[in-house]
Image (cartoon, rainbow, N blue to C red; front, side, top):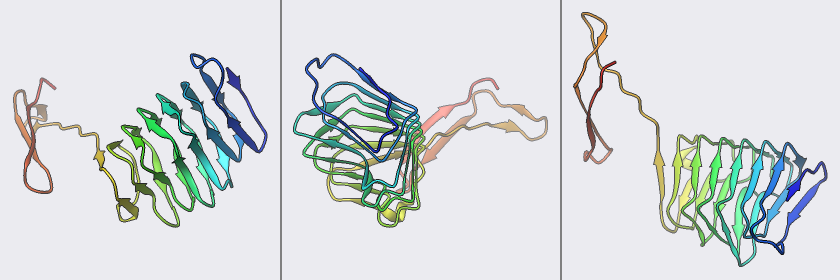
Length: 196
């Protein structure tokens, strides 16, 4: 199923054929609500001045959705949230949430989702509120003083590239040991470099 909307509101309700996918591409609207347990692809959309930008609703499971390259701005309540929905294993990639009242708010049941290369900034309240469980943020920008975790946890991970060079010759060092410790002084990893 494919929707392209320049309207103010789009609500995707449960559809009769759960094996169909919905692709929403290059649209501009004020709110998008998902209430369907099918795979959704929301790519390159702009949501501006909504009460809520993207909302997962309903009692069915909302699984394996992919939201990529969307801009959600100036929402008076929240950029992305869920209500009465089991939201699992979704991927949020390169989205920008800016100038919203709150960036992302997970209620109980928003679990095991992956946020990669997102920007969540300038929220007037919280950038991230996690009352769900076990969500992971990789290379995602947000203000850590605007994060609240009241249920489960969030994993925050960053990319790391290490280059070990001989300063006298300016060449890479093969088999150099690189070790890293976390903020509690526990060893996070030890690896050897390859040929540079």
